[in-house]
Length: 324
Image (tube, rainbow, N blue to C red; front, side, top):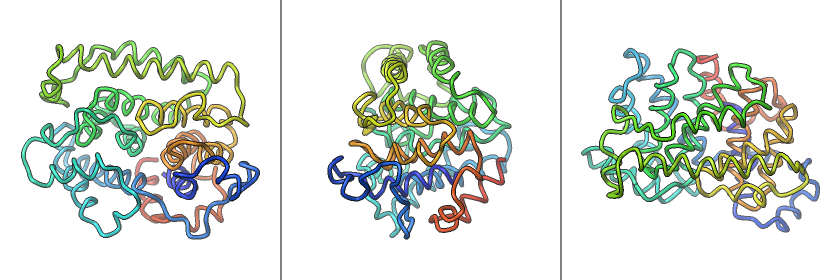
């Protein structure tokens, strides 16, 4: 939880800047500082919204769709209405949260055409709750995406992101992740879980539910192809977005953030800096890279002078302790 917020705060400063402009801030990407006022963006705010909803849902019993959907809808609407929601939030999240606020099925609020990285930038808490079954993680990851981003690739990339955090927190060797993720994608490729998604696929009007979800997994598998190619010719000095995508969409955000982490799995600070010094959606990339690094190395991975001034520190630590 600390790692994702640290990455978000570092990347907030470089988002929307060119590589040349970032170079004026820090000629050496390995020295990019955390701003003195370490504010986060909507990425961390929405992550905390999911964390609160997940905590409340689990307090009432085993995780089931309606038990998560109700508090998550309320948290997302509260975030949408909050005066602190002034950190360049994504338009899909804003529009969908407005529709959620009007009531009715969440599937009607979802943007079925959007696969923006807002789907998976916030999903990390689901990977930290050890008591959840794999089906619960998969279903909840897709549900939380679907409330705003209903595109099948947003659903699939959110599930891959959640399982990456889960496996790293369980102690899986980072080098094993690409093969594990590929196997998982093939296994899930035509599995549309109606108990979690309801009739979301019917909004698409093309093919069966199985064909709908397969499109998302196929796009995610192509992103894993690009990740494998980038790792085969590993170059930590290169802009990661040139190899695996700029990260404005979910599967690219996942692949590029994971690339930054896998290039330097034992140097979490370098991993988030590499993600932040990129030509794409730097705050979301660094947020996800920080989540992966933190899941792998724990809270002690980060410099104390960083963790002491990160925004929302107290709440981040509370959730980390809750699920440790």
